[in-house]
Image (cartoon, rainbow, N blue to C red; front, side, top):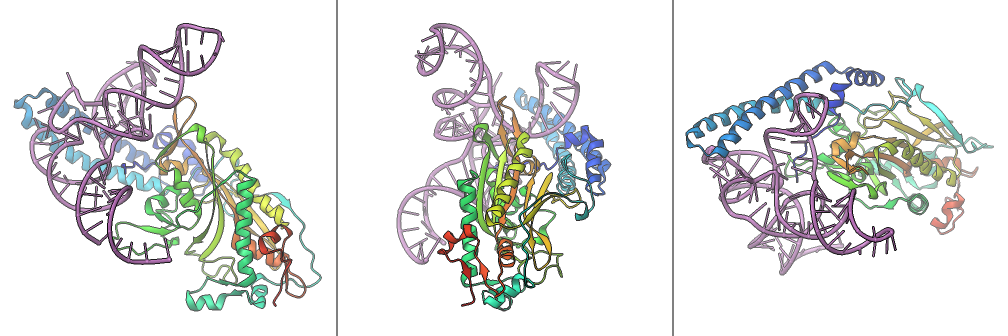
Length: 426
RNA sequence: GGAGAGAUGGCUGAGCGGUUGAAAGCACCGGUCUUGAAAACCGGCAUGGGGGCAACUCCAUCCUGGGUUCGAAUCCCAGUCUCUCCGCCA
């Protein structure tokens, strides 16, 4: 494996356009000492120059094969070593600071501190009118005897669930239905990936170093080697192109996978403790696109449409919102969230999140492509849920519930469920 | 788990102490020829970083990390990964 020089933000760009960089950090409401970054960068370059001067001298001596200069060469070696140490320290410090800075928001993204500044861009589907008080998914699931939270607590702990019988079938049907749709209609290629990723891969997509605490880490004999359960298939799918130079003719790359996802959800104590909205383990169908950098915005629209199409086909009411700068994830430059209507909460809840990460992840991963001019550029990466299966299951339970506590099966899913039309208690 | 073999540019693959950042071939790009294409011939073609407005120039990199040496792709040590054979196992 080649040594990887990690670059999360292009320091050259920061140097050249400090003003803009500071402005975009402000949009994210972040306090970052940019002047310190620039100072580190300057020092770093100063030492590099110093080192290179010595290295050149040494090289000349070696080439001359002049024995009288050999002792001098040895002294230079010591000098280089000293400078190298200093330079490495500064470089590491610089990289550490840079690796904690999130992606720069796209110009389209509304500026705001929190979800209150998100903007609704689309509302679709008909909100169901119930002649009775609609129940929550966990009431429905427990009444059907098909969701068992207590049992999961006993075997595993809180925030896990046993899904049983026809709901387990529904979960499986959803996975297959979503995959089939993305593969056959949306031109994604199906992948069944590993569910474990290296620390390096986690760094590539932006989960590390900042969100270490949210990850389930595996216990390994050799503690220097860190491995993690994937918090989303995005990690492993996006890293498929890491350290690669992709031929332009192979772009765009579109892949989809249905995988379990594992999240510690540190810092979410007390939020959504009831039901299966927020679990430590859940299934999700994930789409990932690798594109030429200028295609990011159009691909994001395309990807988001692939996600909403699933909700259209399932005939679930939803809305699409664009996240403001303060509510966006670490690696994203622009994000659409898709929220599905939950009758028991009388609220829209997130069921998918589609993001363009521009070259933010590809810089971390060293994923590049050659364009028509033979220039090597960092690729654009995008990821989106299409959709979160657990939450889709919830949405179906709640939106398709009947007065007697049974659940109508959405028409499109029936072929995937032995053509049953209804999920009953008996 | 045992025993061997290996890791070199987009790919194949030579080099095994000194102008080797690296032969050759393939792929790719440009040109000549051709009505067009193919073939043939000519030329170009690694990545990262530093300096410079630029032409350009300098440094690093032959799996990773140490060591030997004035000098390492080449020698030594440790590690990682890959392949083959045997064992074990969904």
